[in-house]
Amino acid sequence: MIVILFGPPGAGKGTQAQRIEREKGLVQLSTGDMLRAAVGAGTEMGLKAKAKMEAGQLVSDDIVIGIIRDRIQEDDCKNGFILDGFPRTVAQAEALDGMLDAQGLKLDAVIEMKVDDNALVDRISGRYTCAKCKAGYHDTNLKPKVDGVCDVCGGTEFSRRADDNAATVGKRLEEYYALTAPVLPYYAEKGVLQQVDGMAGIEEVAAQIDAVLAA
Image 1 (cartoon, rainbow, N blue to C red):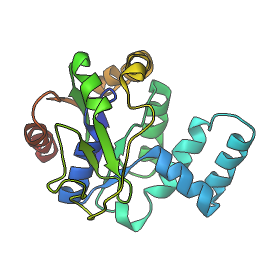
Image 2: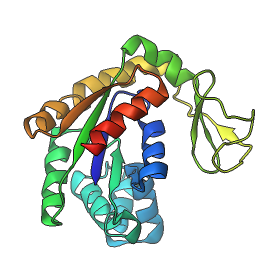
Image 3: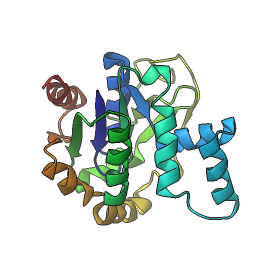
């Protein structure tokens, strides 16, 4: 099963992707993590990406697609994977479709988590992650069962992204609606787009997503 999660910053994509990974056996794939791993491993695509970055240039879409292609051929992706944060543009969506088709694969679902923009400030400014396993938490909405101890790995160190604050939310939302949201009609035309209420409680959102996956 191949799934893409969509939604503006703070919609809860990471939280749901981690849950799906644990419960459904799908691998959560982040383009940032894959890029860093490819560069560190010195793969062909990793070396191309490194050359771009050292030249102060953006890593091109064809390199990113190549890194994803290489990653999904690894054994842990046999049961499927979740893409979180990619594609960000229609061009990337088209390139991703082309790559999957060449591998004999196809998208099963693109899930949009719809959220009220006014609620995102609290969500983003209050979230943090375990420094060891990257499990996500929130100051009020998703606290660890034991204060200061990660539910997943037992770690006691946590971190917050420097840009997870109210001052940057507006700009990130503008970028999302200008660049990424136009991808949704592309997938709607293909008949794979489904929407869930991202404003519901975490368990209810999970139930909605599971219903989509079951279908």
